[in-house]
Length: 226
Image (cartoon, rainbow, N blue to C red; front, side, top):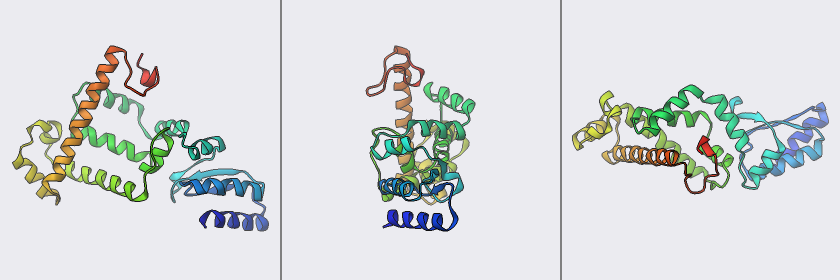
């Protein structure tokens, strides 16, 4: 009923105050798309801002066409690009990308990339902006965000040498790290496995870039590769 409640609240305020615009917070479900249409029809005033959370930083300028694309599962690449431009330092991003593409990056670099992603907002909100990405439930999102927090805790429990040269990890080091952060050795192994997967993926991207070919499913010219 939250969608209908939103319409009733907006109408009541407009009847009393003659609104010039509406802000819809937590516009993170398909039902809220119906609210947006109904509010516009019932009040006759435009929707100025929309958000996917309860914080001011979660609000964005409302674009009807982009909202329609999200509801239809077509993503919203323009909003994603704008978020990246606002939150990510371009020079640092290029530096990190070059380091990763060369295969010369450590766990500190992986952690830095995770933090950059976190700046862009919730995982569920980001997936909705990417065309073709599946929806995830609040439970799945909570699990993924918890895992990212655990990764940070585990990496911060490592020594400088371990973070910059993960190949030195032996069982005794894993035990020490796990004990130091209150986690299990299996949790440490999960971080190291994710790092190796990321490293392999970057090597593949570098090979595609050198050959001029594109990975399957990517459009020509993506990422500046020709």
